[in-house]
Image (cartoon, rainbow, N blue to C red):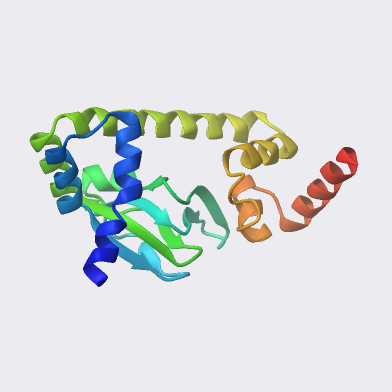
Amino acid sequence: MKENLLQASTEPLLNYFNKTIPLNAEETQLVTELFKSRLYRKRQFVLQENDVCNQFNFVVRGCLRMYKIDEKGNTHILQFASENWWMIDIGSFHQKKPSELCIDALEDTMVLQISYENLIKLYTSAPKFDRIFRVLIENSFVTLQNRLLQNISSTAEERYLSFLETYSHLSNRLPQTQIASFLGITPEFLSKLKAKLLKEKS
């Protein structure tokens, strides 16, 4: 029974790949063999600072966050990843160097993971995946670049509206403190901002 549940959990990932480039039976089997299912409980670390990121994570259900804690103890959230999103410290993963970031679960989260070695095996066995992951990484780079531009040129209100557009499915699932940290503002300021936008709508 447990094996069947783990097998079923690969379906969202297969659907994700098939929307990019349809897979044949052999490629589907490779995904099933090389990706491993793992459950992280709420607040459990997927990656801790100074550890090497050894897994490329696809979220089946739940929510992860990637963040940095500065010298003053402040938390700076770089990214959230919920259903059908990916989470990785790509520099640590590819360069095998200790990460400066942390990844943890904001909810009980089921992921499908692939190691660096198995990812290379996937590329070698089915070159189609090389293209799929290149597109994935290119899209992630564009998202990161846009977020960087927002941080240096947009108002807090503009950043919040962008958050609602990108993470609309998470706006009611995440604590206000997490959203504020992602936006680089205080929870109090976020409350005032939400009240202002609500008033403008009414």
